[in-house]
Image (cartoon, rainbow, N blue to C red):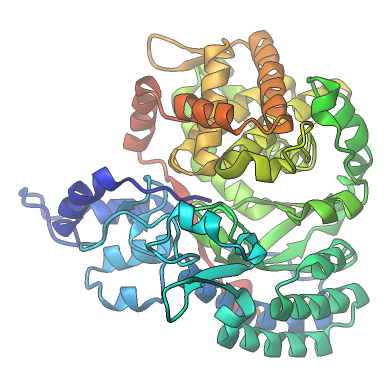
Length: 548
């Protein structure tokens, strides 16, 4: 999820894409594809459907309302990250227009935010969350404590001074429409916990205080559908990594499969104690009111739908809610399966040596993603040296190091649970092999945003410590013994950095190791030339779902 731009690329990128459009190549081939057509076709289509047979009549009636609210969340994200959709009306090339829709603007989110629409330079780091001409000094000098709220934007008053505006005031017209729709949903909902959640979420939208609705959402465990919506993740704020973006998921629960995940929630405190690091670097006590569930996702909107698609959810992000009630972790099975079948497995067949390709398994991908989300709730939340929360102390490095933590701690948990006999459908070798293939899948999203930097730090640490080596033919050989040691060493370094709030070290380390090496670029070029999709996009809607 995302966003750093590079000034030096501006003129080159504009020049390249000015001539692309949907025009035929100047070569004799009449059927040659434009570069933008190729980029669009790197996103493989997938239908978002689910088994609705277990839904109650009330739940079925809620779906159209949730879809309509989700579309407003989508429109709000456009407004936050770029402006309005009028950009699309200015583009005549159909491939350029479609690519702009995928990226929610004129910048390629999976290629270092390079502009692809003529006339646009680098993507502003501040999006529309701050004035375009704001400086760090000016921001620091502003005394309003709400400047760092997740739910405010900064604008300028008539005199040009910075002014803090709450989301409800900034987006009042659209959020009022959402509240009207929520009134309808509240009237229909016959599940008490769903009704309470919707009531509290409505209040949150109008007060910019999401604590009570997050707490109510934590209790929403007996419903066959779920609706995650609102301003949630802060990846789109490239200026301060604070402001949250609007998004929406509509989800249908697999009740039977979800029940099989329950046992892991009670194991969280013990799993925390077993992390391979100094005890003072894992002093957080995770809540056991968390739950783990399996869903089919039937609607994506806003931030989660921009370019690379989310395949798992770990919310809420509020540390206070996590401390009091834990968190909810959702695995989005249908989207996960689509990525494995269309992307992961084909990459593994190119990059992993033949003798180890049998270790690439969907079940391993499922468990790795599942415990990546679990790992977000482990480790440490407060620094041990008085620097405040880890989020505050790590500043702009927070997101990338937190994602790196979740990545490698999640893999460690899977390996340990296999050895304990708690996960029985995969082996340690399968977990590690599939994880390494997953790094190559993910880094194709680009190494210029939090997830990409995290992937590269993980990749480079494992490679430098012998977890895998390159064969002469360009395939990877995995040393599973060294991999286990490297996993533990990387965890210890990450948790130490977070616990000490060592921003300076984190910043330098990510600059040195959070980038694509020339050798890896060769591997990625080989993958990209093979025609494997970069990610997925969706055919979604009530008609696709079969709801009238």
